Image (cartoon, rainbow, N blue to C red; front, side):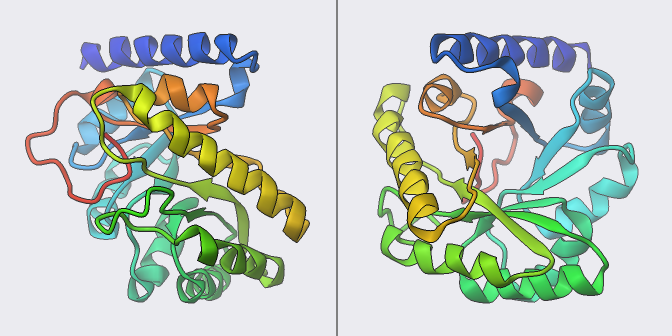
Length: 236
């Protein structure tokens, strides 16, 4: 597992360099180590190397894995979540990056209240309009964000997006920029604080940071190639 520590160091160096190019402080961007499909041993190795935040794609996998991992970690759900799994998600995760409906947001609020917890949430926006991507169309997202003003147990903190897959990271830049511009507009129009932007993965995190990412989601760049990549995932 020594390579995980080395990979983490390399990813952190990339984050710092991208932040410096954009004139952003080193603590402006948080690294989310996406541990989906990797076992608890990989999480423990990353945690031993100082990584605290981890991302999972599926509630069922996380429910089996989290009890086998150190207790001091922060867990983020980045995959699509159905409302009927909101109760489990509200108990397992600290953050949900993939809210894509008012129904889901209300279910998370209710279930977090029953669990005596407070959740942080991001609204996922389909900035590319691809049918294969989860997330709200830009024209629908503002209404879901506005609902955050009426919730007691969920704090809506910002937006998440997954750009179209492209070999050239620069092709993702317009989509990252669009998400930032939407966030700025909605924060002003709705009077909300929306400081967070979850965008950027292993191959394009540098561009995402230059465009304002506050979370980058990195799995293969830390843990290595997956044997069975999960479909519809919020990380590459």
